[in-house]
Length: 275
Image 1 (cartoon, rainbow, N blue to C red):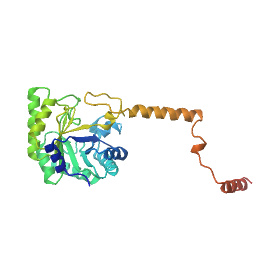
Image 2 (image 1 turned 90 degrees about the vertical axis):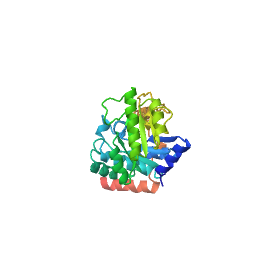
Image 3 (image 1 turned 120 degrees about the horizontal axis):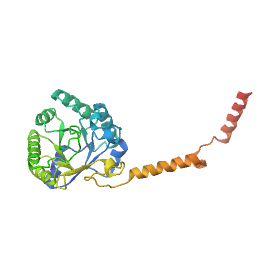
Image 4 (image 1 turned 120 degrees about the vertical axis):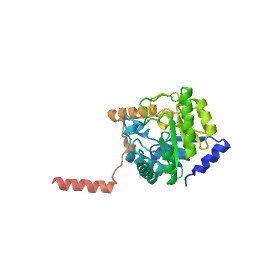
């Protein structure tokens, strides 16, 4: 059974860092679960990282449900947060229906972007775990840039975080905001904060698996490269292509043969067919 949201609040109180990573499929989720990550986030970044969409806005509720279900199959006992995709929580009724779809797919918690305290209250009243998301909002900001760069902008984000907390949020993602602001929000809100490009003082950290593992070639200031899976995959594919073209693959060890008895029977049948 996945851990409950209260266990993460306890981690915040104890000062234990919460490890969050994105996963979009069963094998990646299984690997994350096996090494003991605390939370898997099935994010709408699946659109640009896996599905070939131009923007997170192109991701549908069906897409999210499909990938949450895959991640759940790979990590049956890990707490999963699922993104409500763009334009699926415009009204309270729509948000509740969308959240039910993600929960039915396997999400323990639903996440949405923006400072909508009333939406938090509505989701909580219907017994959903809720993760909010402020700072950079990929669904709503035309350009992916740092947020809260001025004192007034930082104060507005702090006010938003306070309001969401008062409404009952269970987590809040802080994306691409100054570390001083993230530290202040972390101290002031009860909910665990999950940072991405928000400095080290958030209660937890999340990175996109494609970025940290080097599956893609993008370089972000907030990311640390922990692997080179993209290079390894391209090298493996190139070696495979060379072997196929040269006749080096498959070799005798990769083939299967009929038993002598069945081979003789097969040849007799062929002979009868030809005659």
